[in-house]
Each structure stands twice: as C-alpha cells, then as structure tokens.
Length: 264
Image (cartoon, rainbow, N blue to C red):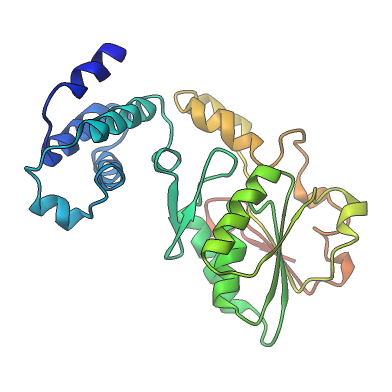
C-alpha cells in the first residue's frame, strides 16, 4: 500500500486521469453509477473545482499534495469508509452539513421525514424536539423552514452535539441543544412540553448484519453513534418519547420506507 502511494506521488496525473483512477479502483465495491458519484465528490474535494471546471481543465495535472490526498482517500474508500466521512461533508435538504464519525451520515430518505413534518405541522408557534440528533440535520432543517418554531435537540453523545452545534452556528439556525438520554426520565422531565417529537435513531436489524460484513465500517460506527451503552428502544421511554406529557403529536421514523412511519 505504501509503495503504491509513493509511486503515485512521483507520477503526473491529470484531473481526467485521476477521475478514471478513482472509478476503476472502487468499481469492485460499488455499482458504476455510485462509483462515478463518489469520484466526482472526491475530485471536488481534492481540487476545489466543480464538475464543469474539471471538464474544462481536464488536462491539468494534480499537485503532489493533491495526489497524496487522493491516494489516502482511495485507500479509505477501499476500506469501505464512506466518502462523506472522508471529505467531512454531507448535503441534506439543500444545505451543507459537516459530518464525522461521531454522527451518522444524513440519508436522503430522512429528507422525506422533514418534508412530511413541514407539510402537516400545525399553524402558529410550535415547540419541536428531535431525539438522537446526530449531525443536527433534522432540527436545523426544520428550524430553517419554520422560523417561528422553538426547536430542541438532544443526544447522549457530547461529540455528536458539538458537531450539530457547529452546523447550527454555521447555518444560522437557533436550535437548543442538550446532552441528554431520552430514556432518563429525571433528565427529560426538565424539558418543556412539545407539539412535535421526532426521532430517526440508528438501527441495523440482526438479520441484516450477515449481509453487511463487507461494510465493517458501517457496522462498527452506525450502531454506537447514539446509543453506545444501550440497545433500548425509544418507544420504551415513559417521558420525553411519550405523548403522556401533553405532546399533541409524536412523529417516528424507523425505517427506510414511508410505510413504517408512525403517528400517535
């Protein structure tokens, strides 16, 4: 591996050749279309140039430091590290979010959850809580589109909340963050009442693990980002996750399919 990196650092590689190199290297791991998308994301990260600029300057040679960044990233991709963690960026609901291994990568399907809440939210000022906020993509997106709402977000991970707070600050979204376990009734009792409670917790079904062994990075990070010491479900929580505290609406999203959305 180190010999390969050293070799690349001593050759000349154009932008066009680098794109082809990324794609061909990761094709055994990804479908062709996904490999091409990943290559575009990585090349923009490495060069700082958009797709059209890279086409115009396709014959421009990469600098040695760019080659080093490129090969390091390719090595990570071969280890199944997600491209969003490599470049530190993930787009969600038209906004750029910073991500790292302390949070889950925002999923396109979760945008449907945000859209659903925005479509059905009651009129007037509302209070909204996001449980297990991770990168903060859900509460930040909701607050940006519901400027009259008071939005709270909690997570058991201080590192995750630091990432979410950074995203909120950069995107100018006044969200209230708190380090808190949603299953700690004493802690959640200090929260105000909410009109909407939403949660999109991490999950991997036991029967899915066998099919994901080649994606060891996902298995090692996804299930511990929000619940590092517990496998309890949010549905067992008696306070903040429950409508018993006069919450008018509870919104859960626990599957990739809208068939599993639940309103209580």
